[in-house]
Length: 180
Image (cartoon, rainbow, N blue to C red; front, side):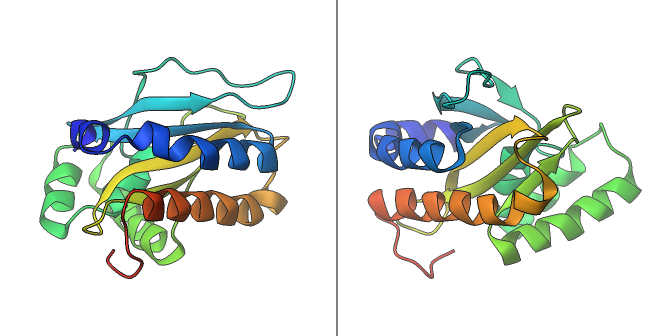
């Protein structure tokens, strides 16, 4: 699916203006990634506008169970594929998988995922899906920053901006709302 996102569309070119706009609104780095096997792979990054920003390497990989981009792509998988991917996650126990499944349902309802100190202490990430013309989530957009600049009181406001950027990119690559 990750390679599909990159090769079937020029998702990078078609997303850059929306990534820059989101970066300008939140000040933090903005990334796009796609699923590759059982991880999310970073395919594009726009660096934040603060003096101190997170700079990730292109090709960096993220897990599906504790990162915002991973949870987004896991949440929007078809049910059978999602069950298979959840079963293949050996890093967490069954109780945590059940909690994760509940979180995935909330992600679909809200349209965004959070990673608040889950992967890296002191770092908050907020991600949202990018859909293709068939309504399949082929990639995700997210922002990451220090918890102090992405505090809990601003999370929902920023999450709505990230979700909106994901929707705009989706429409720009042919998605028609209501297909997800």
